[in-house]
Length: 225
Length: 225
DNA sequence: TGCCGGATTTAGAGACGTCTAACCCTAAAG
DNA sequence: CTTTAGGGTTAGACGTCTCTAAATCCGGCA
Image (cartoon, rainbow over all chains, first blue to last red; front, side, top):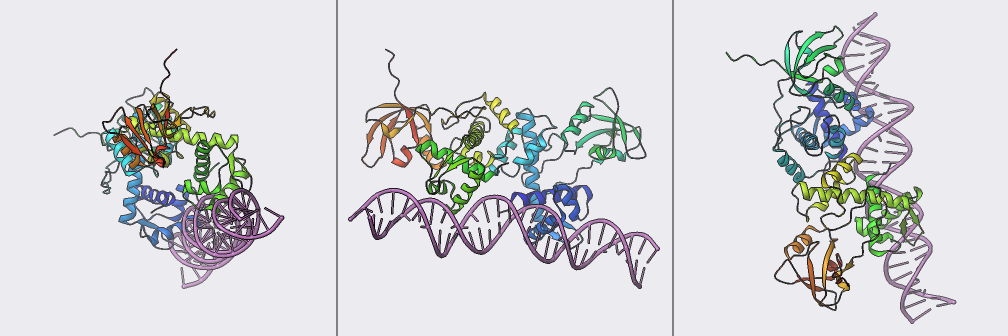
């Protein structure tokens, strides 16, 4: 049996691994979970002993297949909860993250299945993030790219908004930045700020790099040949 | 801030107090929570220090007003969750207890409010147990009595089935013993076993004292004079 | 190549919740 | 009033998760 805390570490490593595709460093985990580095080190010892992470001292960790499965289970719980709260309990997408974070460790398999059924087995949550399937197979990475990767003038479709800050999410929604909308990229400033016009808003919106990097988009649909 | 475990102790004391109306003994709490007596003693030390319980060494505890408020909050969470799981996620009344027990410590006030709203502010859960109101005022004790208190031949109405064992609850449901049904008391054996006929079942059902004492009923309606 | 700064790990401690073993108090029986 | 059985408390320990302080390692720069 794994503790809630262990699950949190595995989830954090999983999320970081999706972002960086590299070995995850102690300090990154510490920042993600808001604990100190020695705390992370000692937890990594335990996770390694249980063969949930592969570790090289001083060089970071990666999840083992077993560790990844645990992380996917938690992520599935989290995202199903986010979807359920939005669909059936009238939560706004900006509010669901904190609630799901608290509940994700405490629901049964049965609860998970019933929630998934009530939602019609969805495959994305309200932020556009993919919900791992019930078999917990590692999802193939979606082909989204950060909004900052495109040229000025391009029109793209928002696939996922991977931010957790309710204030940021509310701001984005108010300015028409949500999964599914089209964005025309107007300007990318040298310091990374992206200005774009949403199909859902009148005025353009400017996003600092830290926010823009969480907005994942897919390229404009190619005209069928 | 209180830990989940502290909340569990307060809830346990509250529940025991409803049953016995007396000071609650260390051993009773230990049995309820499935821990040893010394564990209870040390937790009572902490709860006393926080003024959540009134304590007399060697003579048990009672909840302070503050402790009772905390307990009522948890009980409200628990029973709202039971009601919600039954109403909206297709759980059977025999299954909801364990799930609610795990979730009750981890829901926000916001979640509580939304669930209560989705249910239409119910005042009983699927077992007929009263749901504490949002203001957490101590409810006046319902006037139910254990089924064993009545004479043979009496017809009574089931108000509450205060058992948590899924197997027992399933059995009771199969034999027509659920909140709202009428029971005719056929026999009360000297060792406490109650035999009754339900308005919802063909054959009578016999319940050992340990089960019967959890079936709370209200007397037959007095004919209006 | 050698050193230095920053990150990581080791060491040691503390809070929490639990246990077993040993001691002690209460209340009931005589 | 005394004894005693049985529950309650104290004592001491352990596992988990966290911290701060100190030692150690890595990698880039001179």
